[in-house]
Structure formats: C-alpha cells, structure tokens
Image (tube, rainbow, N blue to C red; front, top):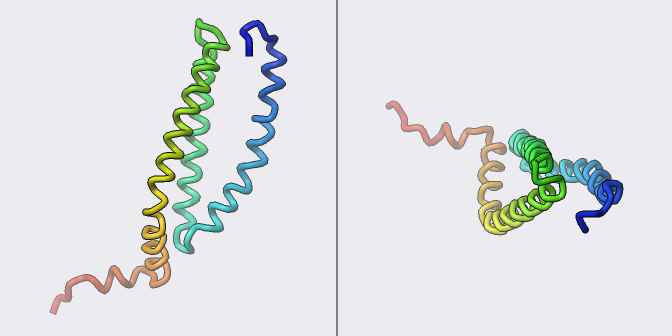
Length: 127
C-alpha cells in the first residue's frame, strides 16, 4: 500500500481482521477444551487465557509502534514484520512439540484416571 493512501483505505482493509477474531476464538476455545484430557481442562483453560494476555500485550506494543515519530505506516510495517516473525516461531515450535504431546497427554490422563494413587503408591513404606 502506498504511503499516500488515505486512512479510510487502511481502515477498510482492517475490517476483516476485526471480524474474524470474534468468529475464530469461540470455536478455537471449544476445540481446545474438547481435546484436553479429563483432568487437564483447567490447565488447558489457563494456557488459553495466557495466550489471550499475549494478544493484549501485542495490541499495546503494536499501538506504541504506530504512534512513533516515524509515522503510522512505518510503525505498521514493523508491527507486521514482528507478527510474521512470531507466527513463524510459533509454527516451528508447534511442529517441534507435536512429537512430545502424546506422552504428556498420557501422563495427565493416567493421573486423572487413578486420582493420583500412582504417586502415593511410589512412596517408600515406613515398615
């Protein structure tokens, strides 16, 4: 987009961003909690809430970048570059963690199933 583009063009292009967030987040949270093990829904909810905090911090940082003396367009370019870098890092981390997930889910499911009895059985006997 050229630097001489009117602000209403930028606002018009950002409308899909504002519309897709509310349409994506409820199904995402439902899928997240549906796939969490029985004893891990609280942990899954906490992790999801942490990601929402990260989104709020991102809005604050990107807002500060667009308010720099270099101008709104310069700040938005930096914001979009940072967003792309964070998205790529997240994708690479997700790819790297996919192999570790089944073992962690099995551990949480086992603890939830036996009510923590496995950990009590491992204590040395006092006799």
